[in-house]
Length: 100
Length: 205
Image (tube, rainbow over all chains, first blue to last red):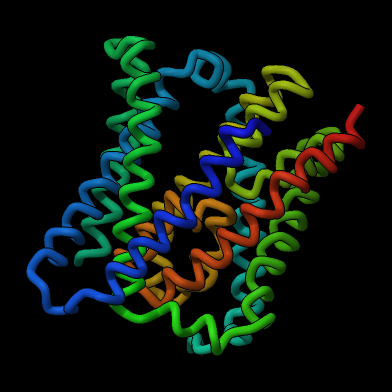
């Protein structure tokens, strides 16, 4: 883990904190908030597209898809399912979130 | 309807990105630039999520929640490792290497680099793929799980990604209150992974 990785993680906290502060001080009815939400959706789609682009352009991943794809997918599916079941098991214990 | 459109949009973006990347039409230079731009974009989105959380005064919940909020990240880690053990047995995969893969908990950039460095490029690629698929599964399944009133299991799927990349989706689909839970889960797991993966890697031959 490099210092850059550590910095990349730590920088998210003041960024989120600044957003929280601005949001807290803002009028919930302000017109610019609608645009900020639209920008959020657009940014989300762009980020996902970039993620796909990185995967598709990586010869290491695309070239060995057949050999590592099955193992990777199996690990992903089972660990994700395990996490989801873990979340299901505790969802009624979370404060303020009582789902039926 | 909005959830379905978001899911459809995500699917189109992922497939479109992979196909464009695989054609080789985009040069390596452009991709490395896009990669660094993606981080700035992620920071912008985190900022916008912060505004959403702030408007809803969601931060005040910090005063009311305590150690109870740790229950979800712990359940996510334990559930993930249970799944990892099953995958290791089914694939007849080296046990500790399987645990290292599982220990990434969705943080593909960190895990793939560490595994590549310590165990070779194949393990690095496997770590990358398994964690990316986890993120994709979360992005694809979360809106549907939210509609089925299984929002918390949907959040749990994301692992470490719920602090950044999938947080935006969770916030858009389920609202600020769930986004707070997602961020907290992602935060705790993100703090665990950099210690967990190197620790598990110490036991790999």
